[in-house]
Image 1 (tube, rainbow, N blue to C red):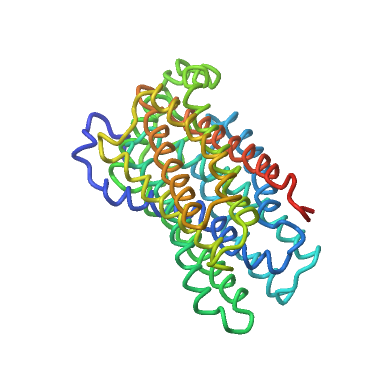
Image 2 (image 1 turned 60 degrees about the vertical axis):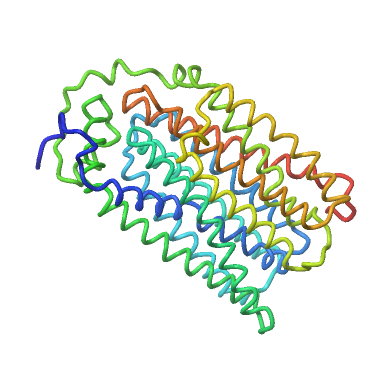
Length: 415
């Protein structure tokens, strides 16, 4: 085994491009299962027309994600990050596969029993998401901002690519028997295989990249214990006599110093999830696109969410001012009356435009916050801050999906 890297410049280390590609794939794998569930929402609305599947499944998912993330963030410095992430991706593999098994076992029939079974599996999705998203973001927070950007771009890409594939499968299977079911089964099978690829990449390939070994070694020298298992997997021996761990800021101090960033992420996702996806499936009315309408809206959001996550790579488009970020995020709340009046009086073109803008601002502002916040801290502090910010993000999602039910007030046959 070799000792930790000391003194070598990261600019001269190999593997940056490979690491960015793996980060993108890991981000893609973090949400492909859940995005597949959202994208095949028309299938579940067909099976469970009285249960509001898009809203209910999202509301089941988020408490488990937030609750698990709360525990993990509190104990972040004591947790083996390698085991945490491998467990998370493995749980995604098992849960997605179980959705396939459940559908095959019930022959695609609806009913309360099947719906409860799906809800249980979705709860496991929430646990897996907390393990993976917090673990990976914390890990990447003490590396390069480009790695975080790639990971969050992968998250968005999972939505964009599943939406594109859903449009293709709908066109292919629309006139065949059980067309919706065939498309849904294809989605879940692809998701299972992709999650398994993430397990392999994170376990065997990512830890051995020179630039990843450099940053993890640097974090270990600064007192981080969460990287020891990953360094051991890469053949690097760590020392136990570092005292910097005692000097790191506490989670409370990190939260107070970055409370504006935490609030920013909370507000971004409160707004986004109060509209996407439940409102788009149930509150946008009937239009010329018919059964394609909700799929086009979901695809529009996902595509612009993906595009916007690359915009901060252009320096003059990146918002680095803390006040500027807060003002931009607060101004997004004007979208709420805009969506209300467009759904009531506007046509489908205006709704597609609004949804695209929602996705554009969601992705762009998320990357700006996540890449700016960790700057200026030591490795262990950056890891902890990454977990704290993901916790605030998940809290925003949880609040958003809860508030999403308010759109049903005054709607006939809401329940």
